[in-house]
Image (cartoon, rainbow, N blue to C red; front, side, top):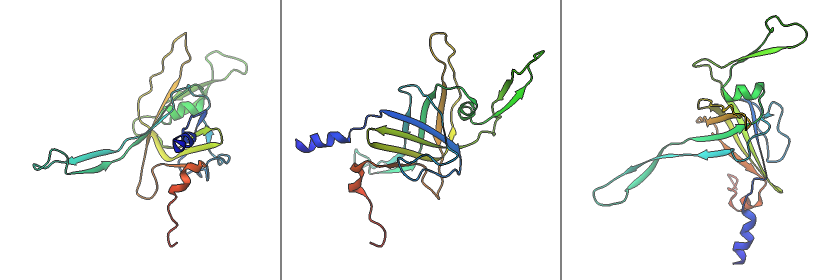
Length: 203
């Protein structure tokens, strides 16, 4: 019983969460608590319960006549996604949500004075760009960072424009992978991870 009570400290309640984005290739954070390196920007305010990270491997099963259960199960592919609804409308968030695009300054028709208007055009087919992402989760003294070197907006954008609620920008990122690096990884200062540290090669 005492061990179960002690393990209650391992429950994570995300008191604060943040999502950071950067161009692919930007220097990744080195640990769980230091200031994010140059080139990363926060998407700002997000809705209270919208941030989700999902890791979804796919499997195939081998069936045999001699058993009612699979004889073997093997993984065929892997995938991971990030979902969050952004509350702040700005140039960087629009480009993140639509997978790129261009913003140009335009002159108001018949307008005078110093007022400026801006035109956002989403990327055309084949023109979407990848981003790097980092999810920050803080629970008291414990910090966690999911680091995603490459991701791409994977869905269409549906924005509700209602009088009685704020309009959010839905960001839906699909993690991209490769053979030469981790598709995603977690870094943390949580002491509960200490017992499973892999030995250093050669020791």
